[in-house]
Length: 446
View (cartoon, rainbow, N blue to C red):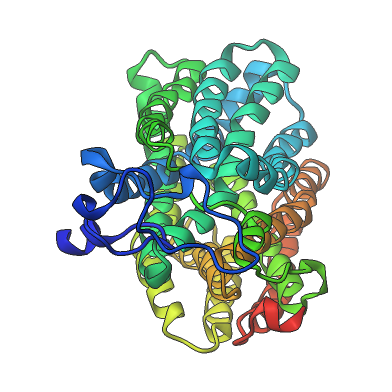
């Protein structure tokens, strides 16, 4: 994206005027129509050098936030065996631990629109980065399984609200570039995921071999991500608020999200892909280690799986945004997942690199889902409702998967049944992906 393009980017509703032409008191801005409220001061474009640079700062904030939305999870997957031994976890409790992200995303994600309405999305994303920082640095030293879970929940709460608000930020600031900006965000998210998977074990060894240090070091990256969002908050430029705010100012008809078949299809698709993703992040290194692969190599294999999302997450949203029906992409990704599961069943060690690549392609159902969230509504107000609904319901759907895998693994003594479960869930994921990919808008359905 060229610098000239970045300089003109701002909230979708912002008039394209130069900073010098912006009156400090808001005079000269379009006046509200009949029955509409005047814009609040924080809704007016910012002035001064920081205001001119604000779109670039938002982009930096998006990228840094995305880099921090998975390391708290994948770093744990790379050291799960050491954490289990250090805290005395059973296989079932470890399975519960891999289910905690989905539970927190569902519980805290649903609160994101209300929090954003009151404080502004910029402030909530900033608070989310702070929560990640504190949770990640505290949890290894909290003492016992309970303290570890509580601190993890704090970090995951920060991830949850940021998860929900990222599509809203993109739709609000870059309405004419939803595909490319979703691609940039998804690419950064995949990069952060793969870096945590690849570097956690060697960093742990380099820092003395303690799994506690290896997990807590990722708080540094989260602390850096706080900085651009502090600038956004200081500029009183909280990003476009949720649907009720938008409806109140523009007269939009409120969307009854639960009446939309497309919203439900997208929520189920999101839930099933999240199930597959968190099983992969939580358990795939252990599958390879049980097959005779070393801990370091198993971490690198997970990193390869996650790294596949870096280029594909940038390309896939661009491609999806140009298609009227995204169903064929959902089918293709699902078939790659089925092939990867078949390989993990038949020859987990012999074809480990191929299976890691196939699972990485399959996991790109996540940026596809994010892109469809941005495309299935006509407004930022609709997107925030759809994003909260899809992600909260989706993560609720995904909660039992990792826990069930851990239980099956412990009681069956092998990976045959867990892998069969993963492959079986891929079939309905393909089906609902086709339904969610139809060229529909939730406003038309409700």
